[in-house]
Amino acid sequence: MEHAVVYIVLACVLGLYMTWGVGANDVANAMGTSVGSGAITVKKAIFIAAIFEFAGAFLAGGHVTGTIRKGIIDAAFVPSPEILVFGMLSALLGAGIWLMVASYFGWPVSTTHTIVGSLIGFGVVGLGVEAVQWGEVSKILASWIVSPLLGGTIAYLLSISVRKLILEADAPMLAAKRYGPVYVFLMGVLIALVTVWKGLAHLNIELTTAQAVGVALGIGLLTAAVGRALIMRIEVDPEAEIKFHYAGVEKVFAPLCVFTACSMAFAHGSNDVANGIGPLAAVVSIATSGEVLQESALPLWILLLGGGGIVLGLATMGYKVMRTIGTKITELTPSRGFCAELAAASTVVIASRFGLPVSTTHIIVGAVLGVGFARGVAAIDMRVVVGIVTSWVVTLPVGAGLAAFFFFFFRGLFL
Image 1 (cartoon, helix red, strand yellow):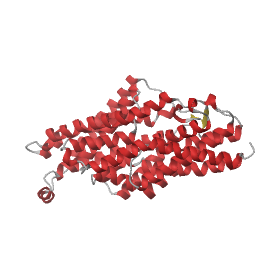
Image 2 (tube, rainbow, N blue to C red):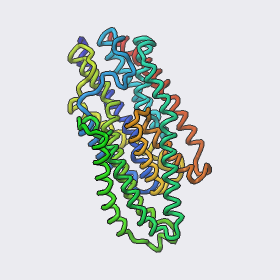
Image 3 (tube, rainbow, N blue to C red):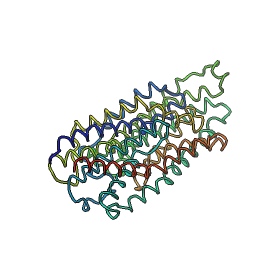
Image 4 (cartoon, helix red, strand yellow):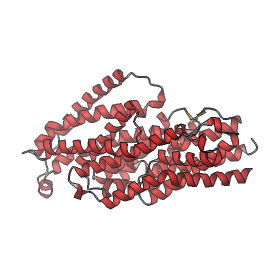
């Protein structure tokens, strides 16, 4: 190809920019509740997430990816390899710009939906309306309802259970020590399933559903035993109890928040890194081979670039979206943050098994809302919620519009 080297360099720069946006916006899904509940500081969250997001992206991010992510565009309509190169470059740039804007304002938007919107924009103007798989797009639209509703319902039920079993007990700390291991067991099982089904999906570890559940139950029992030993060592601080009656109880849930957040960060890094480096890998593949293949290789250097971009985005602007999820929707404590994260993990597990169209961003926002609703509608800042939902609705059309514009720009520039 005449401009092969230029295409590859541009794809690397724009791929880094896109993954920077993934880190700035999406990583708050895992860490926002832990920061907002006071379980960890922003600096610690950034440090922890950097490790687990990078590990997920680099170790379990996969070695191949579909040339056109999520099956949104029918490759049969691509007239020439160059057109697809321009489409991938425009999708990366359009998605990266929208994620930068959303992150700046602290809006938690789905990076998956952002890249999908960009691909739709390129598909419509570059290939024709019939090239877009509109059935897949309808699943994306359905996720706007399914994700927050499912995550919110589970979080609401978990919050009610914590309140009834522990917080409203005659001796809350004793109740926490009694029921705490049960919640640790649930956490161990769900996080193990998330890791096996989502975090290790690209490592070709083939487990049947029965085997995965068996492994998860074993890990759940092990974590419950370790959790019980640690919970029993927690002592009540009389001075802290005077200031806040449930200080001891919240000390039980604080480390659990962090553990679930680490696991969700690993699973997120392994899955969503391809939103940024998938189009990059497609450009590299086309530029080096001169043809459109169904799948593109993900060499280690591309995975390194993607993992590095995520860490960079998290470190520079990740705190803004963390603040929105962790503090602006509703007031969180470690027990509430734990319920939200556990609900998110539960939803991911359910969606993985039943093929439900869900977005991790929408799940965690719904889960935080569910925790807030358990305390009454007054506990939720509806202005923030309206702003978040609005950002969800405009993500697809904005991504599409930006990508369409940049497609014409790149095609005019090179042709």
